[in-house]
Image (tube, helix red, strand yellow):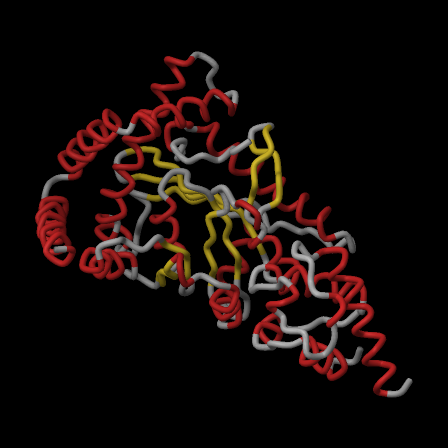
Length: 85
Length: 293
């Protein structure tokens, strides 16, 4: 699978997770690499929920500390690819 | 004006602290009970909340008896302050058998003694949680969330006192996941009180048979970081004498359904806390609005 299609697939999976669990309604029209973590309704507490779901849905275990430092969806996608997604 | 008020409060606090440090334990307890009585007399709202919570828990159905339990709980909280201020007198000793009875489950003790493992200790506002925090710091440094005093001068003394032994207070306003993860990464203990109303961050879990918004932080940290988790309580069993108990380690294999996993762990923690409270209902903070429906 090419890098671009891989990235698209992961973004789709993340959207699926967030549609299920997000308490806020993110701006889905502009959902993409540049979406900020904050705009997705995630904070330091809810990010643990996301990590649980990522591990279940995508099968990748991310270190919580690493994820806390990211600010955009693109950085999260890169981190997932780096960890074998 | 504000600074002057802080200075006056600070002065009074130092005087009270001086007497608390040097008066015999029984005298300080009498003073603390007296202060609690004055507070009880004027804070009618807390009286009602406390009484109604006792009734709602099913521990006592008679309003008069429920009120009496809530009042004794107010006395207890005042004595918690006295004990916490004086606990260094006995916790510094090598041998604490005159003051502490320990019932630590072997799997928890093994984690406490393992330098390569951190531990999440979940507890409630029951008994004297500060004494427990200070005792457990004999094994490894402990970090716990504490409320910051409004007066910065008093806060500096309280912080100094709370930081005795290897207990590191994390101010409530500065408590975030980054701080918690840092503690766990250093293989230290993270002590979290989970029994306050959690609002929108919480999950509705039965507490004494009634749904209450409960903090998800301890189980989420356990599920995501795989850090061992246990429940602990510290009940007063005599003057300056306590029984510290833990549950066994909570093992909740990930089912793939996050909400079910959270419900299972939080249900277990709430049941452990209920069991501790039933042993002595007068040692619980009934004045907090735990149920808000």
